[in-house]
Amino acid sequence: MKIGIMGGTFDPIHIGHLLLGEFAYEEFGLDEIWYLPNGNPPHKQQTEEKEALRHRVEMIRLSIREVLYFKLCLHEAKENEHSYTYQTMRELNALYPEYEFYFILGADSLFAIETWKHFREIFPTCTILAAMRDDKDAADMEKQIQYLESAYGAKIRILRAPLLEISSTTLRKRVSQGKSIYYMVTDAAAEYIKENHLYQKASI
Ligand code: ATP
Ligand code: MG
Image (tube, rainbow, N blue to C red; front, top):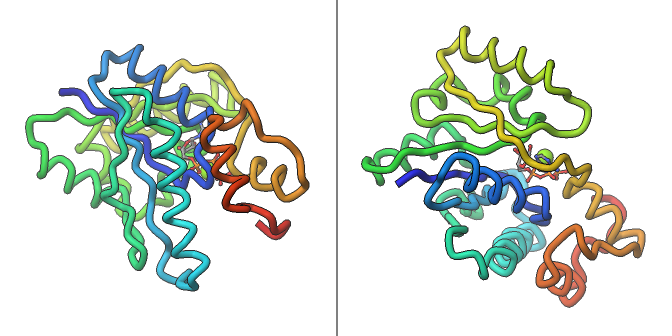
């Protein structure tokens, strides 16, 4: 089995995340895509934050429920713990030795990866599928890929998916301003956000 891992905060999950999964599935012949929401950082322990994890997970569940090959992976969804990608990928490889893992990310993450804890240890555990995003163009991406491949022996492929200028940050801001987020998240997620009065405060 070839498994695509789509890690993120998903606060909230939006169509950018879903399309990345869909195109990775299609282009690389993957068998499943696992959406992997991260936990809450240890310094955020108020009740509100604990609720936030539950909401993020629920919005993923609602958004992927109709796609059989999209799964929710709760490996990092722990309230008091911050998980690191290198560790998660090592554990997933140990848990599922017969699976081949593909880690899906957007350009911003590809350019930030050297700041991730023990990032060198990520590369032997998976092939990275990197999608373009916003201001990074194809030439920037090629350069960064070649650099990471030659410096660290990373295996990285470009993931071609529609370019969408959507981020969870913009969505949270739109909700706090009373603007619509329909068509940018699934209908189920939009309803959930409305019913649970999420993202009302302008500060996020
Ligand atoms: P935030 O604004 O809160 O950082 P986000 O939209 O970047 O939210 P994350 O949960 O941080 O969402 O992202 C998870 C992964 O999805 C990251 O690897 C990110 O690069 C990628 N990603 C998110 N949105 C897009 C997009 N529109 N195009 C390409 N990649 C994306
Ligand atoms: Mg982000």
